[in-house]
Amino acid sequence: MENTYQNEIDRINYGKNKSVIARLGNIISVMQKIGLTAGLVFISIAILVTFSAIRISLYARKKEFDIMRLVGASNLYIKIPSIFEGMFYGFFAALIAIFFIAAVAYGGIPVAQGVMAKNEMVGFYLSNLWKISLIVLFAGLFIGLISSMISIRKYLKI
Image (cartoon, helix red, strand yellow):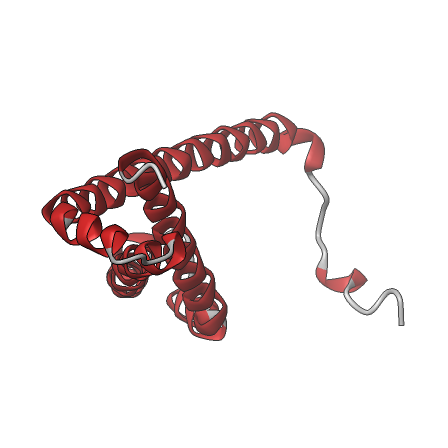
């Protein structure tokens, strides 16, 4: 059972391709670092954009917050609408991101045809669609939550 493919292998030439394999490994390592850095930059930008949008919303409702304080509203009662607003922004941003992920996966098939088989790319995306969508959705909600908490803390000083 061990040697079922032994007759199909003509030769092993790892020694000849060792430098190519090492270069490919280095390229993959650099691309992973670039991807991680770009991801962190995009997350930071998303937090700043959501932070700014919520801050503008808080500024527009400043008189409303003052009136709520005068009538004795708790800090939590004042914060909750802004927190939900941030999560709302994160949710819809995640839906847009999921749409773009699908567009890139299906649109990138002609570009990646020489490197990767079409069925593999589509199959990978479809088999992991729910996982990818849930991760992006929870990340969007979390980023919206964090940015709204930052803006509430900085602007309202509650």
